[in-house]
Length: 102
Image: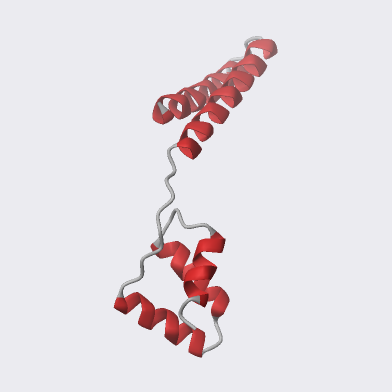
């Protein structure tokens, strides 16, 4: 469903550009942009609903990497690294995982 909504939003944006390029009614172009906005919001909402909360479970190599970062005093970089490894992790979850290594 997400792909359909986002695809329709993109198609309506292209349609609005074509309407302006060929000097058709400005009202039609504005309506196409508004409809694209509605489909964009629906697509982003569908994307947000499909996100799942994944627990941060670090393996030994990841723990060693984070400990090295913490030894250098890069706690912020360690938190960002956890978020790179676990894409759906919230900043709070990532910070708790890093602080759990201390």
